Amino acid sequence: MIQYEVTFIVDPVLSGDEIKQTAKTYEDLLKDSGCTIVNNDAQGLKQLAYPIKKRTSGIYYVIEYSTPNGVFLPKFELALKRDERILRFLTVRLDKYGVKFNADKRAGLIGKKREKAKEEVKEEVKKSNTYKAPAPTPKKETPAPAPAPVAAKSEEE
Amino acid sequence: MASRDDIKFLSNPNIGSQRKKYCRFKKYGIKHIDYRDPDFLLQFINEQGKILPRRITGTSLKYQKKIAVAVKRARHLAILPYVADLLK
Image (cartoon, rainbow over all chains, first blue to last red; front, side):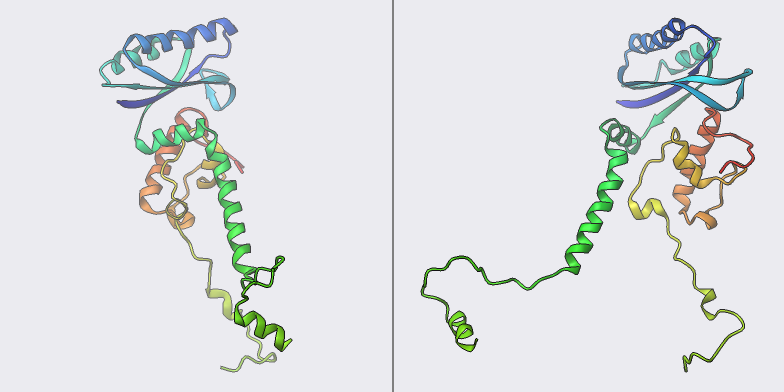
């Protein structure tokens, strides 16, 4: 199964319903072509880094899907291109690292992982700095057939 | 070599040594570069939005190519600008 990711920008001038409907039509188009949708991310309104078609902001949608083959892709992209409500789109084929990255990001591991790694490093540093000689077990000891060294120590003291 | 306090040099003798440059992707095992993350990609472009050369960032060739691809995708999607001024 090949995993793809399509990001498209919808015109913000449209009403909220029209925007959602636009996104939905493409989602349905994918489903009808026999794709299993892995993730559907509506990132919402964002400022564009430069004006596109005289608009300074756009609504970003990211759909991640997997298919057995990419036969439907030319038709899908043609539909995206022809649609006047969509400003830009980009289809990316994900390799195994990309798939793993997206899965981790959805699970929330990406940002936190770095903090965890930092903490682990700190703990290791602490451990190596504060190394103590294994102290003899202090607890209440009945006069067991005590090992000779202990007796010797007490005698010395 | 006498390292006495009264020996003064006109230029700092330690000036040649610099911090070791390394590829951060190899070191931390990062395999995938997300083109949708502008904050991460800002590290690899200058204030004008141009991609920094790898002798400045210390990245290995393999990952420099991936960075370039990611930045260009981000530019296409208007996440990063093509031309900018005082970006950082």
